[in-house]
Image (tube, rainbow, N blue to C red; front, side):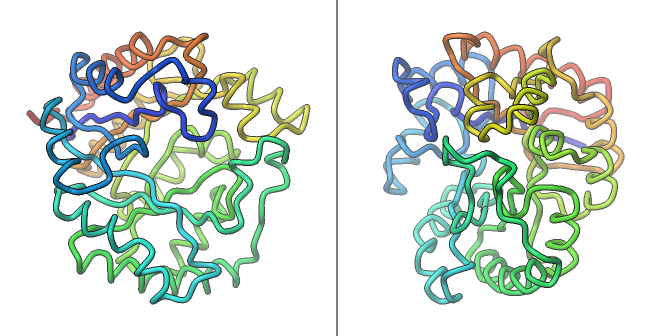
Length: 301
C-alpha cells in the first residue's frame, strides 16, 4: 500500500481572505513546499492558467498537480452549460495527470460570506439532495470519460456539509461520483470522521487532512459566527499540532485497512501571523510521515 503527500498552498495564499496572506507569494509557497518534501500541490488561482505554463511551473519546483478546487454551479446550470463551464479545468487536469477534480456546489453556499453565520448555510431535503446527486452523477461520468475523476468536497457553509448530507449525496449518486474526505470540515460539521470513513470509504478518491482547535470552534458556535470568522480566528490547523483535536493515527490506520492508495493533502488555512506557514506545513508533513509509517502505509517516491 502506498500514498503520496501533497499540500494546498492556502496557508501561504488564502483566496477567501487574501489580506491574511498578502505578505506571501505563490513562488515562495512552492519553494517551501518543495523544501519540506511535499510531492504535490493542489491548483491555486495564482498559478499559470494555461496547461503548458502550469506544467512548466510545477516541473520547476519538482512537484505534481495533486488536484484542485472547482466551484460548481450545477444547481442553477443545466448539464451542458456546466460541462462547458468546467471543461478547460477538466481537460487540463487530465493532461497533467491529476488524481481528481475537487468539485463543490457554490451557487448557494455562504462559505465565502464573512458576515453570514455558518449556521445559516443552505440545508436541503433528502429528495432535493438526491435529485441533485443524480444530475451530478452525469457530470462525474462525463468528467471521468475525459480523464479526470470528480471528487465531491463536503464543506462548511454549503448544502453538503454534514454526515447526513453526505449520506444523501452518496445514496443518490452513481459510483462515477467520488468523495473527497476532509477531516477538519467533518469535525466542524459535528460529524464523526471515522464513522464517515467507515461508511463511505469505498467512494473516497481524495483525502484532506486538517485539524481543529476546539476552543475556536466552540466560540464560532456560541457567538454564531461565519465560517471565515472561524478561519481567521484559527479554527483549523495541521496534523501534529498539539492544539488539535483529531486522532489522525486512527484515520491512517483505517485508510491502511481499506487499502487507500491516493493522495493525503494537508489543507489548513490559518493566519500566517499566528501560524508561520513553513513551520506548520513541515509539522503536518512530519506528522503524516510518522503516522503513515506506524499504519503500514508506504509513502510512494
